[in-house]
Image 1 (cartoon, rainbow, N blue to C red):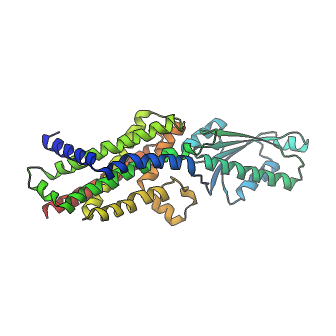
Image 2 (image 1 turned 90 degrees about the vertical axis):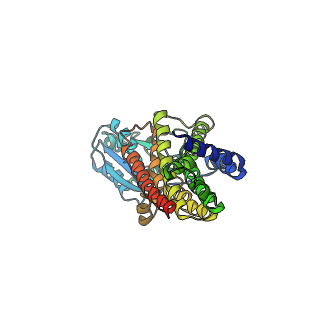
Image 3 (image 1 turned 180 degrees about the vertical axis):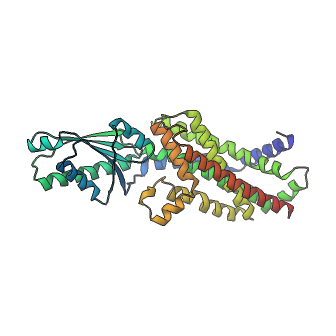
Length: 366
């Protein structure tokens, strides 16, 4: 790395240290958001993908399954495989819950003997798990009522990935996406706009520094700060809120850097369009924080959004990062299971970087 880039980076770190507002945004706001969302927010899902293994294949089991398939809350997936394979469905997010009907289901009903079915629930989202359990129990009670059963058959429910149904397990990993996006996009766009607004950008341009060196010198400090915030949130999530880390720590850190790369590219693009810090801040909020909160699955389940918003959510980088960070922390997903999400982040980062670099070069040359 050239001495010119190091000099620009040193200048940016000195400015950050002396700017009280920037320090508040970098260090205080993430901590406040972490505790606020970690303790306060509870949401529910609207649609449950239910995998069904019917070992009985009798009219009685068909009637039970019909109670789920006929409900607006369930989308039934008939799964002809071993029970042990259900974990793969959960890891690939193809099912939220599983219903296992035993082979002697109808026989025990006829004898009025205690009858049991097994329910498996993916509790990576604790609020969704609670809602799923309630809806499943309601469907079973409806089955009992239709058959005139005085005593309901036994239901054995197993909560996976989040046995205590803690909301923090769902929201705290999502805060990593919100904080990284905010720091990378918001602050990067502001710092370049500040140079334009104060007129110091012209002073930099007359110095023997190439455009690429200017970009690196301005944004690398914020990459380091954003990554530092991500590490802090991960540490607090694990040691304070007790969120488990089932996957590879190195892979989690790599995905954080990849997401920072995408957010940074978005911030650079905003900086080429905005002429003042106020405009840059508003544009960064609209382009980063609002989509992350509303359309990524951070708070509101994507499956519960209108179809148009579900389509738009595919363009939100945080949607893919949330699947990565929650999958690795709660389910122990590996890169082979998350390669599509990782690839989407890399493609988005390259796309925004190329566009922002071309526009930035045009601005400098103009």
